[in-house]
Image (cartoon, rainbow, N blue to C red; front, side, top):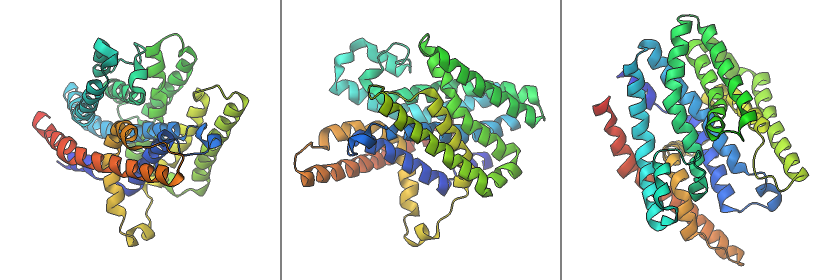
Length: 347
């Protein structure tokens, strides 16, 4: 039970990071920014922040659980628990999407199997590409981490080397993105593994994690890396406006910068926020980010009005944001949470 409680405990700093990340996605998809800023695609920064955050949170759970019991039973337990967290809401939203737009036909099966990237059907529901990457990570990472822990035994440093090697391999695989869609997905594990590295420090090297959280120089370095990534994407877009993607090296720099800041963010506290009594609001928004991410395209399509009147447009924008949050809250309370409560019966 202590292990379960630790998984369910929340951290305010990480909650803030989640909320900021989903806000970047919403702002990007609402098309409310000037063209010069819109082309930077800040939503992609939000998605890749989620990758790093997922790596940290899932990595911490896996390392703790597999360190206590490195077995197929533990791996099975982890996968079942992730299934109850990710799949039911995804299937619900996907079913609604298909009922309202059946144009993809029988190929909708690829989405239910999380292989839509491999079959080039992703354009039907673009934002699910990040779910494919994360779902395959959830399936494969327990095996990798289990092997690493078995080989390294008590040699935590060796485990750290293994994770660095895996991350480097993922970076090398980026070169072959155009040759294989499967390799393209696996190569993006790199961004998630940056979070896993920080999780390893948190579990096995707590003194390093603590020092990182307090070091001005280390946190400044992480912040500078993020600024460099933003500068580079602006430069790339200015040099060739037709480019509609982030070069992998920019994603690498950004994710590495975010991962370096995780210890500091983890220990973030704000007396002002406590005085304003919005800590609970941020915590709730953080819980709803997954539902917000999946549902917002539908809400935006229905509620958002493109009008020449600035007043009407921003009124519809406010309504779209509020409607998305309310819908996500309802989905979490009456659908996600009850299903997650069932996990204990199966694990």
